[in-house]
Image (cartoon, rainbow, N blue to C red):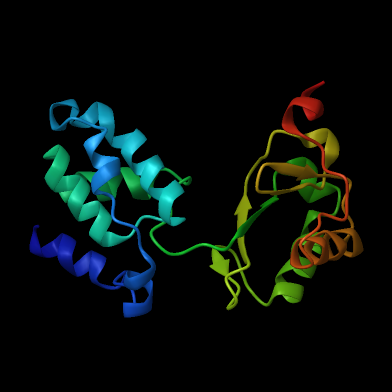
Amino acid sequence: MPPKVIRALRFLKPSMSDIAERKDISALLARYPPELRQSALMPVLQDVQEQHGYLPVEALEKISSHLRIPIAHIFGVVSFYSQFSLTPRGKHIIKMCMGTACHIRGGHGVLDEIQSYLGIGDKQTTPDGAFTLEVVRCLGTCFLAPVIMVGSKYYGALTPAKARKIIDGYRDGNESAPAVRRKEAAE
């Protein structure tokens, strides 16, 4: 691996407890013949992230070796697409829309409440690993503004109090507010 890439990735090295909890990706890589190279990269990255919840540096190194793709190229792909994360993320990913409609309809108040209530900012995870907050430019459901997405569920017409109630529902293990599925939202 090139020295510049090693220095860039050094800050991502996990703790020993993180390593102990990881699953081996050998079986996953075996599903993708090395000759697929570039065409296999995105599916492999998606599968590894699904398995681990993020992309550990060691996994990127194994992918690089298996597909014979330079680690710098893999890092470029991972850092370009917002779907990928190089750091552990929470069990529940909250995406807060801050597009024009959400902004105009009070999105900042909802975002402030979520950040205050969880004690985290954009792209941060709660210390208990329950929630990660991601501020996004658009969720494509402007008529629901302001809107958040938790996992694959949409919650719209939010107020700060509604956002807190939704988070409490996930903390308690039951989703207290009815969600709007993307398919329903488009209708």
